Each structure stands twice: as structure tokens, then as C-alpha cells.
Image (tube, rainbow, N blue to C red):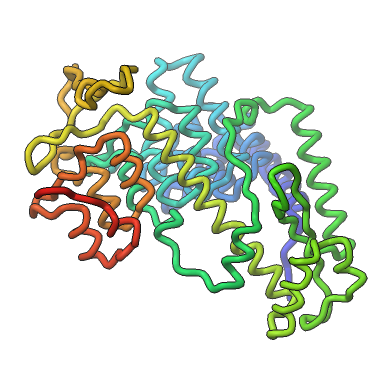
Length: 411
């Protein structure tokens, strides 16, 4: 038996409970459990902005900086779980706290896990929350060039990701056709997400009410944009019916273009039920989001990264580079010049593989091609074992055709 309750009822119950507890002792909101979680950490993990807001307003503001046994703040916990609403609210609280009572650099202390130097951008990329990672890049630009205790930047984490299209499993014919039809919007910097105005709150509430009403009416739809031409698109709603083997022709009429109508009917004839089609569309939609958004994050990191490497002989030398606009006919070595560092890079960073070698090990062709386009000399980079990108890709069983076509020239 399902004993769960709607999110709004759960939040109301939580708020009433917290109010009663705080009447007895305000310090109760600051109590940590065995793993160091406070009520704020739990609220951040659940992604409830309402709960987070009540706890922060009822407790001491310093609660925002309390860390778990694993040295994680509530902001970090929200990022781990990909909870955007809770993240943006906690970000606004951290910003206000830092501005009012702490030096500016303390804002970034909330973003890091103390024990290993991993920050919210590292973890957002690692967990493949690319929509959140994109926003973090714009809110905390300095994190792009941050290094953890292992000497890894967020770009290194991206090079280890399996979310790129080149790393994905091969889809069957009919799934490839559906995949090509799905349109995913590009990510935009959401500069108003952390401004919790009443108007925004009302819009969100109205949206939730509308969605709840649709669910109560028993409607289960998945809207997918199918590009018909460069000038227009068609929104397709696949409606769930009780029958998994047939879709009434009157429901299909006007929903699909004729070609897609026939395609869906063929799938049903082959035994692919309606519910299965809906489930597949949703899965492929999430897959395509990862594929597209991971490339967007890659481009943003590449544009902002300062810790790049310079090719020397058969190995690499880490350095801090600045991008300068030069004539397109100028030599590449003049386009990217090495800037003298004010501080030495951490020793551990020198031991880490460079980004293109790490991408080769994980079969991330998109990153390899991006670096080769801008830094052609990196094609000669080799690992500590003197292995180039082709050997590393082959050893790790990434026989991608795009990697095979790379011309290494004379070695």
C-alpha cells in the first residue's frame, strides 16, 4: 500500500514540526545526526526550497556553513542530488552571509568539500547534472580553474564522463529514429533563478497546480518537438491508453505527420506497445539532454579555463595560459602564450594526466576533437608510459571511427 503523501502536504507537516521544535529550543535546528546532517542538510537533499527557507530563517544564519562528517555543506548536498531550486536558494543565502560578515573569498568556501578539495562544479559534472553545472559556471566562474587534492580540474572530470554521445551505447534502428526527432533546448544562464521574488514564486505555484490537475485527470503525455523543416516544428503528444497494442486512429489523426504515423503503427505491429513507446521517448529525451548539455558545458569550460598545458617534446608541461586574439594566419604558438604564474601549481597537478589523454582513455571524442582544433600540437602528447591518444583509446576499448581517422603524422 502506498503511504506516500503529496509534496505540499509533506512540506506543511515538516514546517509545523519544525515550528513546534523551535518553540522549545531554537538550537534544535542545529543538531547533527551520526553522519553530521542537520535538518538543513536533509532539506537540501530532498530539494525542498520551502523547508530550506524556513530552517535558515528560524535558525542561526551560521547554520549554512555547518559541515557533515564528510565535510559537506548544505549547498554541496543540494548539488550532489541535482536539486536546482534548493541550490539557488542556498546560493543566495551564502552570498548574503558572505557579503554581510565575511571576506568575499569565503563565499567559495561553502562550495568545497574540505577533506579532498572537490567543489560543487566537480560534483555536478561527476553526477552528470549538466544543467546545474552550466549555472554554476556562470555563478562561480573561479571554480572553472579550481583543482582538487588529486590535481584534477572540473575539465578533467568532464573528460571522464560517459554522458557524451561518442561514449553512448549503440541504439537500435527505431530508437535512433526517435532520437533524431527529439529537440532539446540549449541551456541559458538563468540569472534570475536566485532572485526569489513573489512573482516567481506564484508562477512556480501555478505551474505545480496545473501539473497536479493534469495528473489527477489521468493524463500522461510526453511532448516531443519533431522538426519538419527549418521553418517550423510540430509538437507531438503521445497519449497513454489502456491498450498497449493499439492506438485509436482518431487519437493519432492530427498528432503525427503521416510519415511518423506510419512509423508508430509499424512499431505497434512489431509488438512495441504504446506505454513502451512513451517510456522509450522519455529515456531518449534524457539521453539527448546529456549529449547536448555536456557539449555546452565543455565549450563553457574551454572558453574560461586557464589551466591548460603546453606540449614539450614527448610529454607535457602544465601552465597558465591566456587566450589572445591574433590574426588567423598567425602561428598557433603565438596565439597562445605562456603567462608567468604568480603561484606555483600544486605538485599533485603535475602528476595528473592532461585532459586530452584522459578523454582518450574514456573515449570522449568531442573533447579530443575540440583540443585538436585549437591546439593541433597536442596530437603528439604521450602519457608517462609514452602512449599516444590512439593507443590509449585502443587499450581502453574505445574503437570509435572518429578516433581512428585522426592523423598522427610522423611519430
